[in-house]
Amino acid sequence: MYPIADPMLRLAILAYLVKCIDDGAFQPLIEAGFSPDELDDLRGRPTRDLARMVDMGLSLDVVLRPPDYRDIAGSLDRQEREVALMDYFLIHDAQPELVAILFRVSAKAMRERLTVLCGGATSRRRGRPAR
Image (cartoon, rainbow, N blue to C red):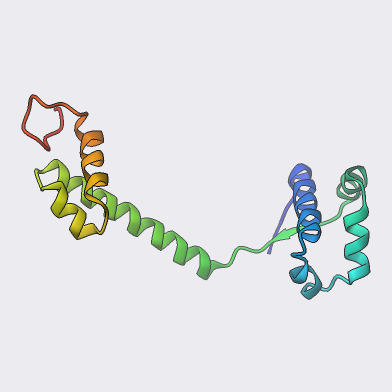
């Protein structure tokens, strides 16, 4: 767990928890040890009280799960490598339709990507960026 020191962020988190309680998404708070009466009390407090609780030192911690972080960061890295590879093929004269099939995206999206990469110029060979 990582403690949240910023008072504005702690107040925003408390306000978010109140919204979750209002929306009926309070089960994680019950599982964390809050009683239904405590949740009802939190839900009924004005923002002024929440701000005063933060000022009085109410502590809040965030949990960042390393396995989740690694999975999501790896997925993001794979997506970025895939886009770079698609761009490489398009810049080096691969047919947009073929690239679309290889990367399972629409041919229209590939043509639009090619236009972005090459600036839409038609005077030079298709697929060649301006140098």
